[in-house]
Image (tube, rainbow, N blue to C red; front, side, top):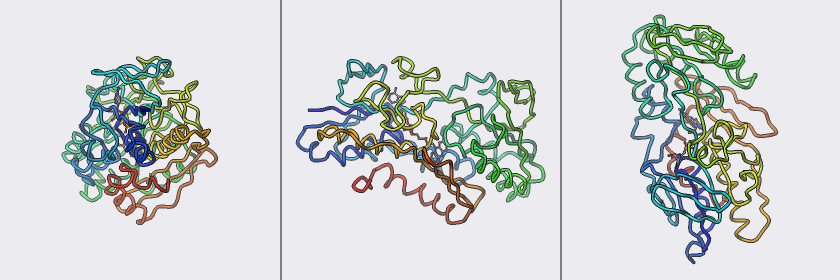
Length: 384
Ligand SMILES: Cc1cc2nc3c(=O)[nH]c(=O)nc-3n(C[C@H](O)[C@H](O)[C@H](O)COP(=O)(O)OP(=O)(O)OC[C@H]3O[C@@H](n4cnc5c(N)ncnc54)[C@H](O)[C@@H]3O)c2cc1C
């Protein structure tokens, strides 16, 4: 019997395990294959919902489900934490067992390194996990005037448009509460643009002008001073805030650091087309965990999960794996209540974005619901 071990039950891991189970169902029935998903959490989280909670656009109960409710039959859930991966000996040591695998898919996502920015925990808020989103929701409800800074501590971070979306939504929220003239919204970014792509940055700057949102560029956050309520950059610039909403520093999982094959920020180095961990034909990494220069986005994690599932099936069926990842990913960027635009890109195409419309906003609302029964459950596996 061959063992496929998937580590991480987030967007990429669930998608990979479910696609594998559909594609290998006959072999699973004949006990020729087993698919193991290693994930310590009881829940699978739909993280795009964390941005919606503070603005009252989603309820927290809509952003998570018990993992076994989204897993396809045939996938064995091991509710354990992976402690160390040995790529040479094809094994994963967890807090309770040791798994010897034939194929490995690492989908351990990103962790937040709050301690990298002194004062972050005491002085800044964020919407990057459920707890942060709920706290921010309360603070926004109580906020009646002053300066709100929306910023990014450094690159890379999850969902590149999310901080822009937050700035646009803040404008609409305070406008609808008749408080917009009492609230100053400032957006900071560590690059000389408000988004890594010039076309999208120019588009966002036009919207900033319409909505009266200020921007401070090339602002590389070094410290938060919770007493004076200042954000301080590496070159000594200070921005005063009453509420600071900041994307925290992102790193790869500690598992990668302990296992000794990550880069200096614990991202897993992979081949950009095959998604193989460099030098290991039977081991892959997908989603936020990789060092690839693509968005840290659920759409990317899902596209990569499909590629890896196909490559493993090709290998098991005795073919030379041919399926390659083309760098594709996309996002629906909310530009205010009732409006969104769509961004898509791949390795050969710099980000293309479609003008804002109500249809894209509607699509985003629908997707927030259908994610659970469509993407997470890999129901399109037959045609993918
Ligand atoms: C506020 C916000 C808004 C977003 N909006 C969008 C959007 O609009 N569109 C979009 O495409 N993407 C969006 N994203 C990004 C998207 O959620 C992530 O890119 C996606 O979840 C990545 O999937 P992943 O499987 O790589 O990681 P994750 O979904 O983070 O899952 C990683 C899993 O690995 C597990 N794990 C970690 N270490 C171990 C270990 N040692 N052993 C076992 N398991 C482990 C974790 O518990 C976790 O369950 C958003 C993210 C945020 C935070």
